[in-house]
Length: 202
View 1 (cartoon, rainbow, N blue to C red):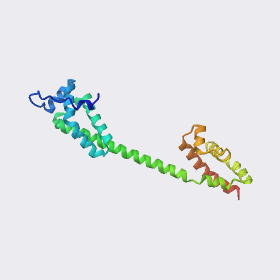
View 2: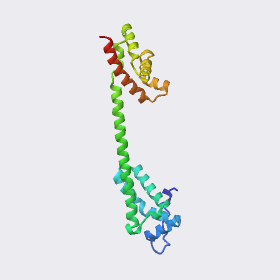
View 3: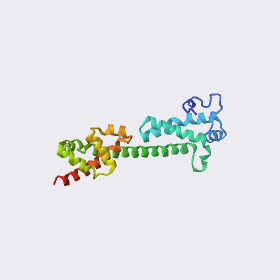
View 4: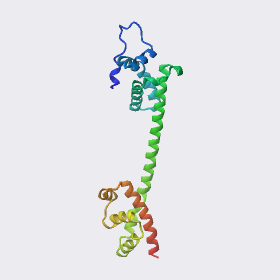
């Protein structure tokens, strides 16, 4: 249902008096589309203002209001008159939805930050520097020997990078692995490879 189109369909000037909220909701329960339009027209602006004050983003506030009124249209029987007015119930619903959205957005930002930090750690690992240091015939032989001590999935990534000259992105494309998986295997493999190489060179 297009709620934006509901804004202009309120009670006409021909009505003898404004219909109270309880009556509007009773009509909504009976499937009265015009009553729903009037309820939306009456409270959408203040509901949007409340949502925007809490979430600070216009599109999120609009989504919250849309979802709130859709829930009223679908389940008007959730309203309990003994617990307050229609207005307080509606505003309470908007408030609860807004708080949920704020928590969800904060959680997503936190997870994104953690992922970025993890990728930064991988990106900072001096893989190219290590490979450059062992780019000589004797060292190449040591690398081949050391690779045998790595788990197969790490050995495969390191071999493709070192002996075939592939970038991590190219390895991801060729193997179908997520780039993050290639990066983590490279990081773990290079750490273990350096340790093995240190033992072989003694």
